[in-house]
Image (cartoon, rainbow, N blue to C red):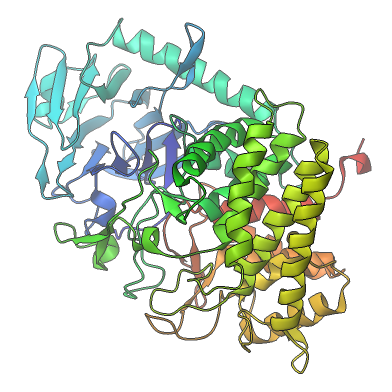
Length: 598
């Protein structure tokens, strides 16, 4: 068995794990999402089913014959059923507790596994093998009467169970004759009887997630896909600060042996903007409110100066990129990178995304903390940066590492910063400031229309004065810079179709970059293209392509960053928030209205 991305995430917005189809934890970082992985097998390069595999937590059934796996409806609670060759069957229920306790949110950095016999007398082995120092070795273990302590790199984990502890310590094969509870969390005494308490946690966690899903305004069609995407986006939030990470993993290559292996366990301003935009369309304002708190801290710290494209989940500015040699990488395709050089980049689009994320707070009466005059003044400093930098070179939305240009997407985002701040000023009754920012938006618009429009080719270009295309030009309509029926939009979309489309997929760009020519399609860009087709009236083709994208999801209903052009294999970090955002946006746009069935 070779590692793949057919993985199901569980979590509670404080901690998360990826579970393979055999019920093995193969990836989890603790105590934070950007910490040393305690389960590192995903990047170990070998077979997770091997008896010698490290960095995992498995429940192996002797003479295993088949498995099946699915989430409990409208939750991130995972149920894996394993059947042996004699008909014996085991049910494993995995989750991270999440519910209200004593009037506040309870989301411990803990995992719960409930192992229940379903049929016959299955024999099992529990292998709990956390690692330290990026897979360099197994975490040392000590034990007590009903617990085991694992001294991991950044924390001590404690396993509490009603099973004999020696069964786990010695990885002993034993008959499963009653339900076993395993609680793995911080090194604190477990309060209560473990099986009944874990079972109660399961009920409360199920109720929490189903109540949250009930608040979503989902489209009529593709509801299951949208709900699964929304739940997973919530798992990609770090609620302690409000940060939203781009993915739960690092170093899954964008294409085989490409070297395009990046660490996505951080909060990109751009990615987070698209996440809150998509969830706003479903009415999930809780994530928006948390993220706005995160942004306010970033804006305050910048004091009107430079804002990075990416930060740590605890507002960290230094995300120094390094390569670790203790793990060979996904399918042996290193390098394994920790940190991301993008924190050093100049990317001017972030100023627009900050304003766009915040502007709803000036209008939305549902929010617990509506935006204030002080917030407006802080955003004015951000928009001032946008105006001063819109026509200056940057790394662009695709974070090119060795060359800079004036990117049309970045300029359009700077235009949006000034335009939307004018809207906020009007809402606050600040007519003079509204005129000021509308005038500045007009200056940027004129520059984009003059310097990014190629009249001879009949399309906008990716850079000022250039002739190349990239998929981000589809966003000019989403930003309301262009109307969908503007001939310039139709010309640009037609050119993108001709140059960047590969079958049913869309490339980000087709020119060579620091690592050569891209070999896989970027899923988010394909969703952008689907939106563009729908907006110019090509809804039939848009729906066909959308259904094809849905068919590429794994068994958990999720997507990674990229897809192989040849065989549809998922590549890139996982689960990718960009891809799930695209799924939600397209479903909302393309679905038949509820009025068609009511």
